[in-house]
View 1 (cartoon, helix red, strand yellow):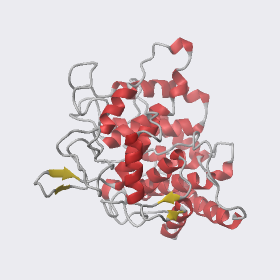
View 2: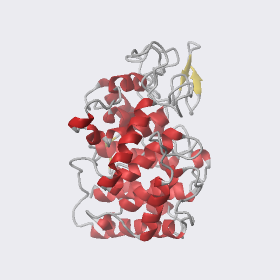
View 3: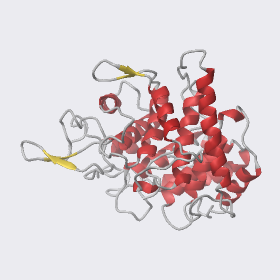
View 4: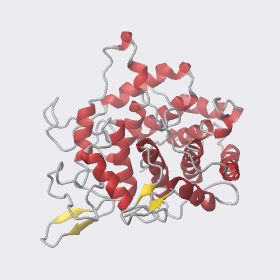
Amino acid sequence: MLLLLSLSTLCLRLEAANPVPFARGEASFRNELQRSIDRGLTWLRHNQNTNGSWSTPDQPAVTALVLAAAQGNPALQSKRDTNPWVEKGYTFLLSCVRPNGSIYVTNLPTYNTSLSMMALVAANDPKYDPILRRARAFLVKLQCDFGQKGTTDTVFDGGIGYGSKYEHSDMGNTLAALEAIYYTKSLIKDKALVDTPDLNWQAAIHFLQNCQNLPESNKQEWVADDEKNKGGFVYYPGQSMAGSQTNANGRVALRSYGSISYAGMLSYIYCDLKPDDARVRAVFDWLRNNYTLDENPGMGPQGLFFYFNTMSKALSLYGVDEFPLKNGQTIPWRRDLAMKLINLQGRDGSWENTSNRWWEKDPALVTSYALLTLERLYRDL
């Protein structure tokens, strides 16, 4: 399963409206961040395939992540990267566009289309708007409605899965699609496009809350109500990558885990739920109670770099400066996360996970995740 969610993973034009800066006078730290970013981008430039792609050309989402990282380089300031290697990457990405609006080669149409859209958004070039409109419409059509049409009568309704013929929706594909759809809202505001179908955002919220361990809004039998899991998210209703537990009363409940809980928080934000919404507060409480940079909580090293990237997006958009932990301690999460990534960078400038789960031994994929995270942290300075 490619690029779990993330997600996106690529919010380059619309970051937090009022990021809270680090302490003033930290020019040396900013220079460290930029040096790390420069080394990562250099590695990517030198490891591009001859056809303009990165890693495996049958998954253009990897190339999309690289291009988004190239466009997010803080050294560019308000400009966009038009270096030949970047343009070659976009040429490859455009070669994957299909007549129905999707952007993929062999499989995983939701992930590939969503992340490719975010790379096109990052280019900030109006010439891509027609492609983005068609791709957005393609994703909107993938929103699940399994029961009676026009109602949310199954727990999977409102979410998005691997494709139109897949038997259920899931948090990974849903996050990727919500992100791309959210960041292209402006493209359908034209009066001439008034009849263009939009996502059913309320149905999306219905699916999201059905993936959350929160008995107040999710009445499914598997929902955990213990302090360790309450508020967090699972991969889809009835399935958690972190497994299950049998409670004292013999009931089997699903465990929450870190990366997908940040995905849930981000998805709620894209659906315009406010910070004081009980569902948003619950997932935020779970995340602060399980804060760590040593692992993806509940998953160990699996999906660690997606976890970092999704954490940085969610906390930035939520407006978190110092992260308040359960024990009363506050954590300067931006600086700590930046130092964590700098220390994990390889001598050649790339990053790679020790675990291959979700393709995180692919250095092009993981280097892109790391760069997108560092670039966001730098901009929050």
